[in-house]
Length: 222
Image (tube, rainbow, N blue to C red):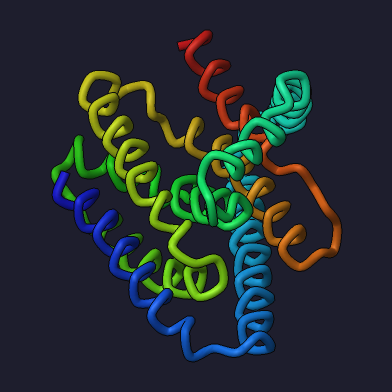
């Protein structure tokens, strides 16, 4: 899990550097950086959606996933529950945390990386992902502050779980499953970008359960 340790460390380092730089950034520059992050999230989301859609063998699954995921998320009011953390943790920026978690954890490299590391002992994808996350965390931290640090242990738990599961379920993590997760994940990242840019306000958190639908479907037919 050397690659995962590296990836987690880059997020921590990037966040601390971004917070340090934030002190010298005025309100206008901070707003511009936030817009840059929104544009980047939108671009990453579109890229993930388009590239994985071409690989998808089940073009209807993402629609079902969004419908079921959105219904479940809305039913338990996941957005309100997560935002309720604001009252428990002073200064916690939920929008920033959710944006960071989606960008760091949902990407193809973040999912395929630990699988490649577990099955082939190759950490190239995770080293690449860590480098990208280093820059992204700096930009996020300059806008959202130390809240981004919360994404580091979440990423570690996420990649660590995938790493361990890959050791036991190597045949389950097929390219087909990765493609379906990439489509749904791309849509969620796109929604996050549009929300940051205030193009449309979408409760992205309520759609997070949609990521589980492809996994459950493939598990059922496995």
